[in-house]
Image 1 (cartoon, rainbow, N blue to C red):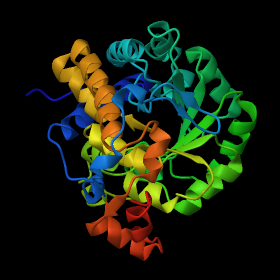
Image 2: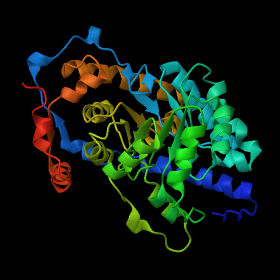
Image 3: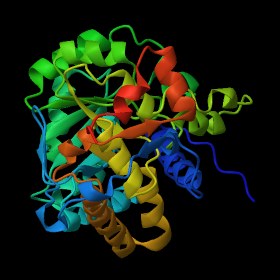
Image 4: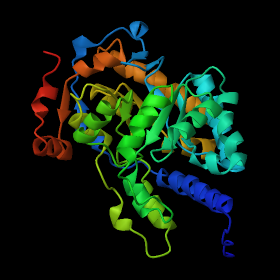
Length: 362
């Protein structure tokens, strides 16, 4: 194989990085992997099963209101190739009615030529719920510009210090994130969702984000796309592969922040509709999928992605019927058996796992 030419301009480096992210993220999802969700087991109560025709998938949070409890989470954008991916993702969102988030839009403030690769999310999905995505270093003015370009309904601000530390060209100073996030919340004009990118959130972090005024927190935990591993693979100094798996899972994040009085979203390695229902039962308002849907798109095409999302939505409704839940919020009364490492996490963090096993009164 001939060596890849070394990129020299900032635009070339951004393009290489974006291509690396897509390629390595897709590869990570080639095979299903173990997940903490395997240790969240709903109790079966046969006489409590409901009526499928009465199931309503709509979710209503403190600020967010969506017709379904599933969204396509942040992935990519910034180059012609990733713009093609975003167009297909946006069409899938349009056909299935799920909200969709862009990849990080920071590049469009450096490279105006990148704008069409993000703008396509709105052009191909004119009536859908679109979330722009930025990093926490951007100014409120840049945040507003990202929202304007995408005509976004909400803004995701990603908090990803582990990824940045491993990323060869990443940030190294995170001390102003809180103040900057507060300014973004104050000035952007749409609801702000704070999210990790696969290393999870703690109770203390979620509480601090709530106090900064965010509308929701995506606990985005380990178990899905591992950006510390991706950035390690991109390094030329031997990497930092020992940080693979850093942080908490979405399960641990939901459990840790259960009573923080802010809407929680969950993402990070959800493999099938049962995982979605488990996360909803743990208190998530809605659940996001990125890497798994990306791999379906890249390997099987746009039609297959639409079919997969429709299957997820249908089977989430089926499983809600099995558990006697008319709405996603009703799943929070489902009895859950927390076992293995999830139970150990609960014990270490002072959470009573027995409470989750006795929620329905059955």
